[in-house]
Image 1 (cartoon, rainbow, N blue to C red):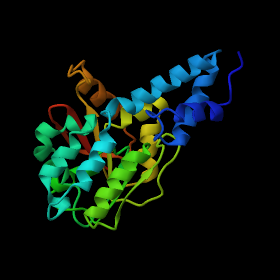
Image 2 (image 1 turned 90 degrees about the horizontal axis):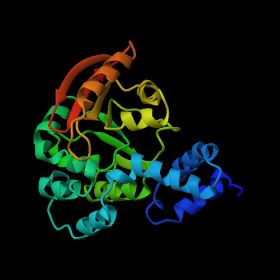
Image 3 (image 1 turned 180 degrees about the horizontal axis):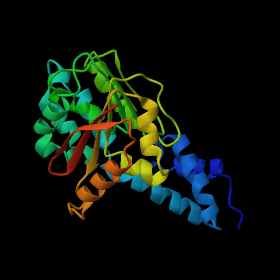
Image 4 (image 1 turned 135 degrees about the vertical axis):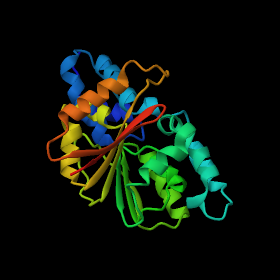
Length: 266
């Protein structure tokens, strides 16, 4: 059986509701990488979907974008950007941010030491991270967020518009192949580096160098999705500190229940 082109296979995958909102560039890239490994098209599709699940879909709860839209449409509060109760409700919908909720106040008190009101933030592989805005000590001047899911970008931009923050914006971007040209003072890369490294060796630090932010806050999971530690903290610490380019210096390291944060400066 002849295997179709990566473009044709990507079109088929994107017709599935589960994957329809993922950046087409990402889907095509993964299909192109997968084709040489299999002789049958059905096996290519299965493997490509499995990889998409690992790098993205596993972090999403079913219907999370639709639920977020409903919550935002029904909002009747006074100022959404300072409403912690609403933020908590939204952050619960995404597995990556949900894990952070038990210590959300402490985590953002830590982050806010390095993200000030005069700063421009670049948040790559953002997921629902920007919806934690009410937990910042002070709101950053600008906020650029990017993710491979168009529905995520849509939810974030709706939130930013409701918060009346015109200098805040979310876009779709495949960080494995594309690097935003936006200038930033502080880079957020929360639980993203392992996923970048898994897809393209060395891409994590390539992105760090290319974005050229004076300060970067990078986090790693310390437990699996099932809550098991599996030596993840020690492993990621060793790998990160060993591979960190010489022109970067670790300023601080903090470990919370499920997540380890590094603050580095160039």
